[in-house]
Length: 110
View 1: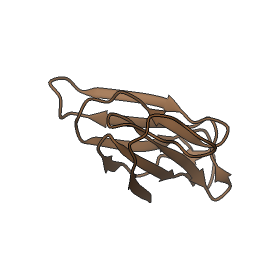
View 2: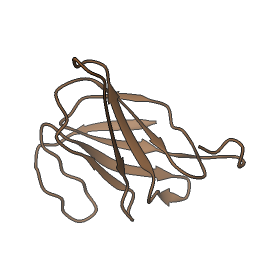
View 3: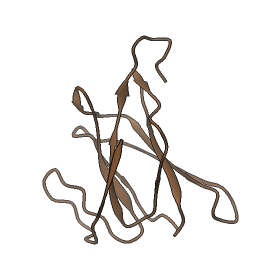
């Protein structure tokens, strides 16, 4: 589950991630709360070559995927003890909060 909210400021204040027109950013949370140290992956095939960008969330579950070329991206979460999240379609210039799902057992974990 993800939510999209528009934002256009390039700085970060408090717990909020503020982005500009070529960024995607937000917070990753699970049933435990914000998820620190998980990967957020953005991938597109809309460009002449496939582009993958991976960042890691901070201690508050925040992430920022900066300087993305204009395209449609599949964005998802991967981390230890988690099941890969469903891929969500997004374009730069948006806040995208992502929901992480805890793995039911070690075998299901990413």
